[in-house]
Image (cartoon, rainbow, N blue to C red; front, side, top):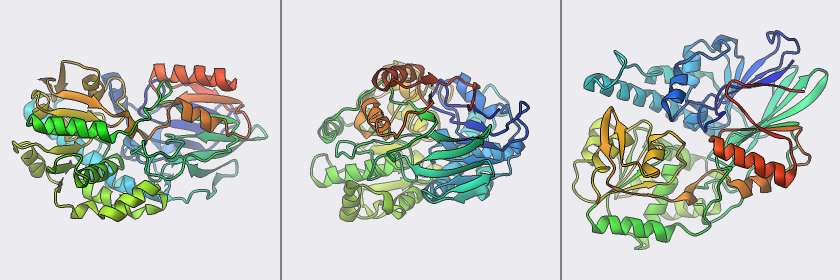
Length: 477
């Protein structure tokens, strides 16, 4: 019997991995085995440890990976999968392939940096501390990628094919629409990946793409994210509040630290800050993009203009490439990163990763969190159990590199920057379906969010909905 097995993003918003087995016998060994997304777990230790565990299926037995988009919670385990023996193809849109070309090696590089730091400071329980994969291993995994156009049908076997439709989350983001012949019947499975904002709006500055997710779907089985299943995005313009927060921080001699996802969110935020400086809404000051891949991400961001919103196109036309802005500095090396914190003058520091679970943002937090003059500004989702969520929720201290760091800096969050559709937007999209799915499986959400979205869909649409469980198998009937 054909089935879907949820190997990640079940009970949490990270580690997205959904296995399709198209076998028509009980052994499950005679069909094609497809992994939709191959993400890295982040957050609580119990989840992070699963990055080091073997999958219930051998890597060499997985035939294909279909990747919805480049964010590490969907793509970040690919180098590990290849390291463990996967030899199939990885299909993704062209922009996603480009973005993974910088994201995955950078992930390996940062893991090597973190392991070296732990070994130097003797702050790891493991001797020696090791990276999940290295920079070189991540680069080698890129050889397995194949770009696919939106709407192009790829036949993986006589019984299974797929195509990408737009998800409107980040550049290149897609939903995987899978066609499967099971028990003599053709079934359509739709894996949403992450769903972008449904409506275009000037109050959604994190939204780069000009249109919402593809409407009029008609899947028999829907596997759907639920990140914002219990939330409604603010509808006010974030610029006045952002201007107030930055201006007050500068007046008291502090700096602004912005944990941001390195791809797209960082670029869009930089354009917004540039515009606000030019309009006199905030003081001019140095802005640091602290990421080894920042300049490469900018180039890819500017390359894929076919997906830009009208607002994004306007900003790019007006200000040109961030590489040429006088106040913007890219810190490409560890030495350049360290120099940022040596400055005693106010600045804006944008650094990855967005949930503060790894990367150079950790070093900036160690330096800036204890000083009440500073501001830690969140512009992205913070999963339960992550360091970012702890800070956002008001914890008085956090542990970074084994050290207890007091939280005395001001903490603020602007939810308008989200790239995820909220509950009303998700329901608006679902109402456009041509038919009701036989079953909807909710994934990629904290338990409260998934439960709330299930209740909303059942109440508003009267659909058959369940919340996926980690390692659960569901038959495709």
